[in-house]
Length: 211
Image (cartoon, rainbow, N blue to C red; front, side):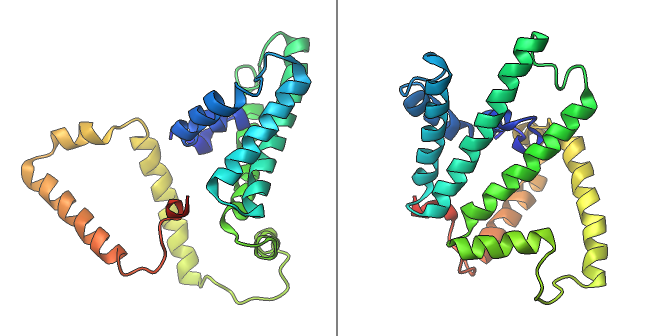
């Protein structure tokens, strides 16, 4: 992964998200299906089939197919407008010459990708619809999930996480570990082992076990 949620556009997202899977889909599905070498129709076909099969790779459920189909649709629309823009402006200028437009496009990418995750994590379309309605704030029933104290904690924790992420975004774990003394490394390892032990008490399984 390479900061996928900072992606400016959906093709950029797939260059950053699960890089190993993205490379496999490109090399063994997209390119053999024709890629971008045989005209626009073949390219759109290859994009959609690749993403649909990528969805089925995650599980034999229609919600995964919709997840892949949405990503294929996003890539279709992006390619259509990018080709038109490059033909008229001579290049992709969205982020270089207009940073505010680039920021908006990154935000739009983030929001639309999150919609696909609803289908990815929902076992049925009914649950997916219920989640989407709740996310939009249009749910007519349901209890308040967050107290005032919880909202205050979120207001502190999220900015702290963003600051920590920004300060550490280009820091490698091994570089930090090499600078730590032996007893600090021991504390980190002990904490990780304890977390693994506590996690065993949870009933939820790792999502990729089913694949």
